[in-house]
Length: 448
Image: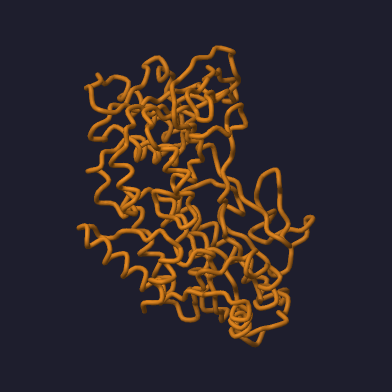
């Protein structure tokens, strides 16, 4: 190829920005990169998925922001692929397209009563307290109103985050960048008990030790664990062994009579939600583990009172028009980042992150994953196997978006939003307050 390689990266979260860094950080193949995201601001799950009280993790966005300092890298915020533009549009304008749009859909419990009022997805709750512009604010706030007893289904880091946020006092949350309306709602919370259900045992839980340990550091909440449930042989896995040690430490504590309690239950799964228009209780079944670690029901059940049920049992990727999709695994089929169509690589189309491998790993996992995808892309470029776009050149996508009336937010727009959020936070003595409204984000972006 005797011209600069032009690549579109769809998704400005960690996977996408790690892919951009790998592309723009090499010098063998001249490249320019446009980063497209349907949200007017970058950073994806680092902004809208990491719990707001985890300031050090949220600081990763300061590192990711440096990616935009590379020459030839542009941010095109507010551009929805599959909405305002199609995959075929991108393929006509770029030599290669890297899809990193993640897994945004939640998994349902698929039990009776799952659709009752007060039964919500962890993704919706997290989006709400992180200030995502698409969060169902009215639904979440209605679900939280008057709640005393909460059941969180799942034992991963998202479940722990949700539990911790719901069990914290207003003072513990005041320093975060949560939108003010979120802080106001949580400050009025009447939650007294949060029950966390894991269908398997304590050593099979997927939370990290740091996240788990933080439950024991809450100012006004006791952690309650039945000693019998964590009286199991130490596992060979070091991570699981550390988790078990923390859990056994919780079980040995004497409750102090604090205002809230976090109850951790293992070998327990919900089998029904009961109530009228709204959840009133959860029917929980005791499970038993097989030798392979799988869980099955025993038929022994009990009821837990609950006015709010938060399901945190995994994420699902979604398909995109013109893109092969594995409906069983909820990922795009691929090999080393190359999208496969009936087992054959789809020329010039690649994937990275959760839409490639499923919702696994931590933020750093995406760096190696993105590097593999970029290596495949560059190998294909050197081999001359990338298709020639019908409308090459940076102006092609700009003209297409302008013709369709798409309001594009450039990186300078994010800088303006960043300044506006810092100024808003300063009025409350915080480093930042997240602007949650989409129209307000566009308005702030124009103040540059």
